[in-house]
Length: 439
Image (cartoon, rainbow, N blue to C red; front, side, top):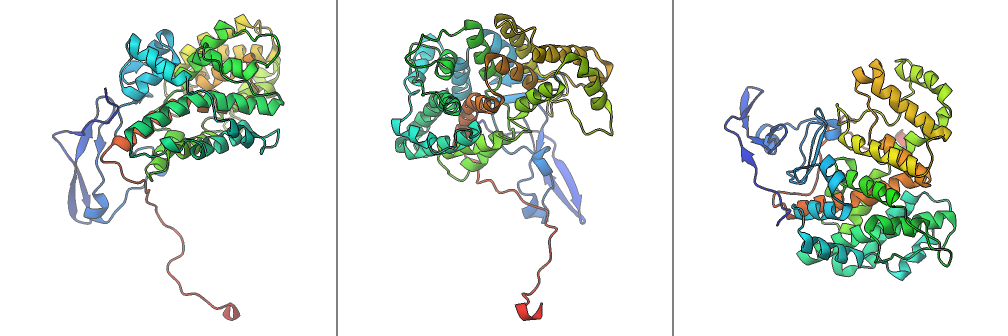
């Protein structure tokens, strides 16, 4: 099995560009799914022109075999498998294997992979000293960016990107150690001692144990409903094509940076409220609304084009249909609220009424403002007892496997070059320096 990208498949016709009386033919390539692409790599060489595409919304930056999204149809595939099927039938480590290797494992392959990940979950004891350098109220993502980047100072035997074995060890270490690092960030924030991982627990169970267990006290029993919900959250957030943080990882990796530095860069990009912080913003909105009787006021504001207020957790930049991840997350949200007997809390009453309105109100349906994955994941994590500041850190934990899979694919791609976007310059033209006494 291989995770490397395939060769580009050209279609018979070509795109023709007429510019300044010159005609240029540009190759067109088609993928397995989705729109075909126009190859503009030689455009500047042949014409002297660049393209202008702020946000890269119409530009394919790479050739990938990993994840496919059709936002209009509400489709998300990992290596060809629909996300709904994986969330229903698989578990997170099996999905990790799929994303890295390209195929689902057999029983022996899965057992070995789980063993190898499990026995990499411990972090170097000296890494704990990094946490003491942060204020106790430091945001978990600030800790994550620093600590993940620092892993390269502890694991020199997996930083050579030209060695396939070292690359694989780095991937395993990052997937394995991220739950430990995130749980330690939480423990540090609440002033509790760190809890070491247990090899007899599953990936999701171990994370909950390290987060909420307390050493030398009564044993923490992991609720299987919560463990399954966390496992699903991890699966649903494992990869999402060339989003901002994944593109950041690829861009950092294109320079030859070590994998730990690349994933730290991904964490920094994910931290933004428009990306990984969306579910945190959603919970803050629910808290602002406060009670069900205030919902009409906020719905009215959301519909008012003159009001800047936005309902967080509704709609999605990519999905113009129902977010397929939200369907699965909605089921988990109701299961968790039932298991924890939280259905009567004011916050969750607000969330459930907003959900009902969004699924029935003509305005929301017409605008396709369906509840998205951030809406439901925020509800689940809050019910479990995670503070909102931890939400993005959990997103980073889950997305790490997507990052390392995409990073590894980029390293193996012979056509990949160091990222170097161009610009449309609108500054001052060339001018001569003026001495101070003449200004």
